[in-house]
Length: 533
Image (cartoon, rainbow, N blue to C red; front, top):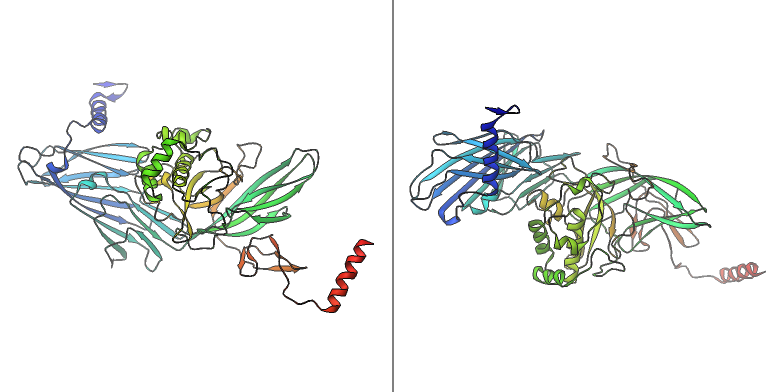
């Protein structure tokens, strides 16, 4: 029988599976079974990945045995799913939602009796394990929920085409070999951890940005706009800016602020082309000077007794990160519509109604209760997987993440609890990736300066284009000295002991070390008298 063209039996089986996943009829305690996992990931250069999970379920009691088993994994495009045991095929059912797929296996021929073992081999293919950006490869192996219960957990990652490439691996592999063109990594334990393998030094992006600046006053006035700047994770080349600014200065959060003078009732469009080279770990000069634990203006990082108590309980940035990853739920519905930024108190009160701004504001508020300097980054997350790495798709400012100051290492550390949550536990605390492009950092104030993408009259206008750079312009480090005023006339920032840190179009007055002669002193007096008369 069918209804509307759908087979009733199929409908009933899908509904039954949904109910089983939401309200399992049998809950097995860890003491009732002993489990072992061996997971093998074979990754081709194209990104296509074959996954095999070898699962052993050992009965610890004579009267309890497994008749069903479910695992969850990242991705919604799983193909060629199959499961077998020692007696033959196992029926599987799947449900996918928000980038996560649940695979439910019906064990019709259970192993009965104490110490009896059910061997299950689950296989599938996915394209969500590897992301290639430019010449880099990012491999994220999600943690499996059931693996937390296992006594033995082994993972083998085989990846092709990464020989002799810089690599960052979290947690570290137990061993590594080369085999038939593959680099093979072996991991034992780490049941509660995902695996991340980053291959490549960095990625360079070309940024085409448009800023609309307006002066509605009755007289001319100066205005400023924030350009993407150097951070400990990114290096900026300012290829072109039209029209040219009067100057570019650096604020205490390390932002580059370009200054313009606008005539009364006028408007200009500033077109900027920049190149941003992104590293997954902090390794560059950071122009920041502020390490504040409070703000001049804070609407979104305010605290109350609840926030203060929770911060005192969690204490460290890592604990705060883990709390947000484990207890917040990303609102996929709201990320397609424009809504107001909620702030930390509202987010911690309603943790299922949050976007990246709420993850970030909560991290900043909680760390600051412990006198840990922290701030917000507005920027761009370059990714092709909007489910696992979601962003607000209706605005140019697509992503936000926090950073905190590590006083021991004396460096700002960026983390991303949003993507740690939506990827099912991928580690965005120990490192980032090649995707996070910082546009602006908010420390002294929670909303100023505005980031690229916010300078426009019509929110629907596209003012940001980001692409992987095919060529990179030559870096130019030039200065000119006029009357002891040093101006950076190159396209990259300059940093040295004489002038400190100076961005393109930046200027600084320096003291001359040359001793003035009698002639110089007489000429200076004459110049002053001439200026008077």
